[in-house]
Image (cartoon, rainbow, N blue to C red; front, side, top):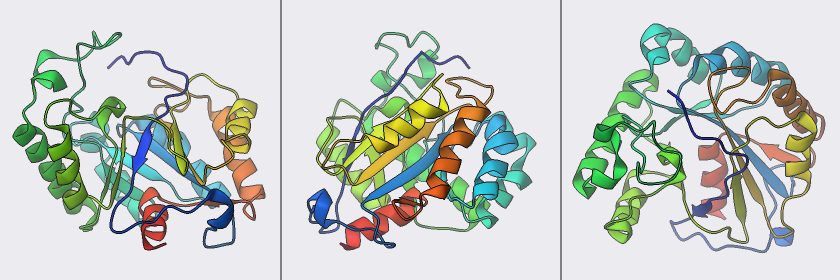
Length: 257
């Protein structure tokens, strides 16, 4: 699968369950840190098993993997993905078939039968709940977070769709404007220094930064293993300043606050 080029994509994070947003300077994470960092990896790619999981273990960091049930890696390396959960990482919902809006620029790679523009609300919700069932068969868990494929929510029936997502997931990441609390970036082809600067230079009021990776040292939308490891080392060496955890754990804490 070939994906369009991107450098950083900023998306809006939605909160619910009575969450009352605090100013960044007043919001502290479990270790007293002012900034949380969620490392996540989309599409269940082989390079994530080959390079990411060993690096996370080396630096003792936890992350979230947004899984596609139709990914070849799931069929070929299922036991390795089960082991990812045993190491304390999260398996998140990324839909069944990764539907994206084919009408947007650079989306020639989207097959017609996975064109989000053609999806009904009912079809998308069925896909999400089926993916949750698949993931439960892997890790036995009932609570889940969601990253929309291509960072895009449905256009038609969007309000109803968002309400349904509230019912299905603990939290999700969706397309939109930056709010005062959080930001999301999808890096490609950047250096370790650029990744570190991204974390160090988030907007003043931001308390949560999500970094969404795809391939590491290969596959597509790739970042080098060297750059990735430089970021992990920086986060591990500065744990007093940065709270790194799975997205579901971060959002449970934020929602409770």
